[in-house]
Image (cartoon, rainbow, N blue to C red; front, side):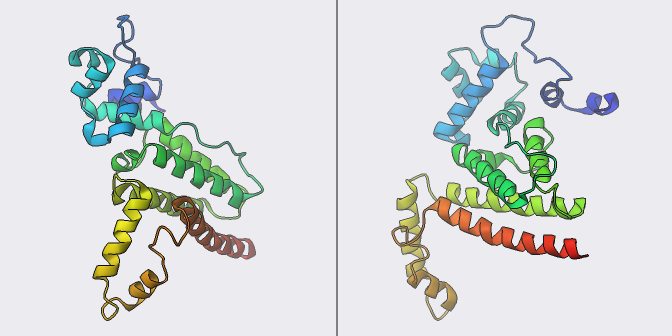
Length: 246
């Protein structure tokens, strides 16, 4: 990264890219940036992003709120540190794996798992990624398509398509309810049965009648996710075949 670009980055990004030291380093504080971020992730996992505040985090860590500001400038910086750390490392692929579909499927399933473990992430990822953690996942997805004849722009479009599918599926599960999934799905199915009159929504009514929204009649959320992903990748496969014949 050129120095002039690095100089324009916020301090939090310079820290994440190794271009600056964490604020608390060198003062031998009782806390560390890693401990602060880990505690924030645990709090958001357990109680949701709305419960995360500097005061609640300080209480969890057993310190004064002002002690946190030795490590992070504020909540916005803290959330970026959380995003970078919570994603974890992406699956490893070569630069041109022979099985593009298996590689991209693994990428999507593992990312879906990240979102399921940390539901608050989908509330924060509302801008293009600039931290190394998220960019590592983007790089891995592009490498999964490295053995295909797709042009780079087409590869990026495919990755965005899969990413939005994964993120949308995770967001839907997160937004349904804080209750157990089966109970939430059952309540939604009952509500749709009451509201979706066949005269106004004929196709939706038939889907409801077929048990599409019944948690006891269909597949588990992960199974539905995998089925949708397979349909999506079928289309990607067609595009790859066309590119090979061009």
